[in-house]
Image (cartoon, rainbow, N blue to C red; front, side):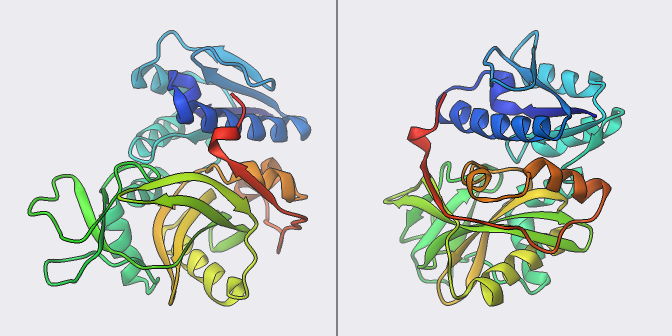
Length: 304
């Protein structure tokens, strides 16, 4: 089968940690699909990943990336892009002859809107970090309503008069964790619980992770909350659920796509990521995965 893996940072020539993380995810996934005997193609602004066949785009704009998705002749495709751009790219992919191995555009759009996503999860009984209002006591977390990771997040004691394009949530003390999972219809297969290495000062800076993070609260609380979130949002394929675990495991963000934790998962999970992603779309997911050992990684130590 011809498989497209379209990673936005590599395709559009982004620099810095975007390129480092994007290249790591793209390389891991491409090698996994190749080990299963599939032919992998990927769009690139120039960088090579040592697997698959890179196709250099004519330009580095979003339009060039989208045109490539519209014109590709792959059998199946996976798109990794900033959450606010992902729904449009997925719609373009689905309008081509390529089977989408990831989330639907609608699920991706809901997940990208942090305000709408939080409200939907609350409606479905999923524990979340609550949207703050003027009657609440601080501290608060300010973050873009649409955005990726920890960018432009701030920890403040008072709410500003104007939030502009941001939302404010209550701040809950606890451990920053994520759950990596693969969803298929009404089935959710957890892969690992991961510790997120986050530097908290006036803002939040993601620095890496430890995979897996074992906890006696894993089965009954953490995985339960992540599964509820995935089902409430109708996620499909690989996704990551960010949580802060204190009095409760509260969902902070939902990433409807592969995340950087895949770097550690590929080293500790015996199953092939590509096989699970394909089974989520075309077959049946296994009951569980086998995880052996642990892996700690830092963004600054990932190879270019």
